[in-house]
Image (cartoon, rainbow, N blue to C red; front, side, top):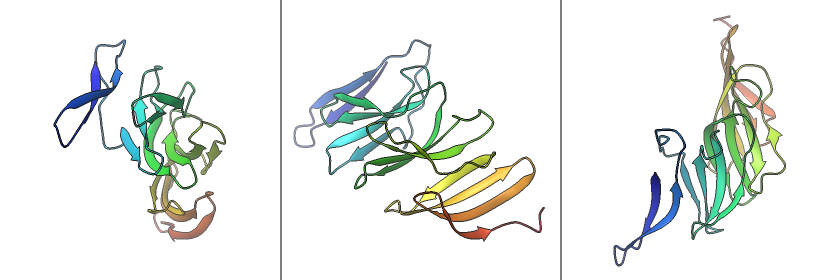
Length: 167
């Protein structure tokens, strides 16, 4: 069992916001990606394996589940954050293949999922603070890492390092 507690800073009084109970004998590792607060909407995104796969969930500030954001027989492998102004969450997953990582954007209501990368291989991202751009690092078994600046729709702005010499 894992309890997420919110503590009143004035009184020190804790309140259980959500409780995770797992069918297996362990609780998933909690990392910086596991909990993300959305201050404007007074909500938070929680990453959980409650349906058997690692997915993203949207809660209100009182701990009420509003929406499962991502769904399917695949894992969210990295959660990059939320562009709260546009209501989009960014993540990578094993959706296409467990041997690959692709980067996606999805609305917080779970609709409008868009693949920002598609080339077979391993993609990682570092997003700008406003989520207008991201630096993508891509590699595959026959391709050394290529680093590209992309816009929020996944379009290449500029190749920063192509590693052509290594090929």
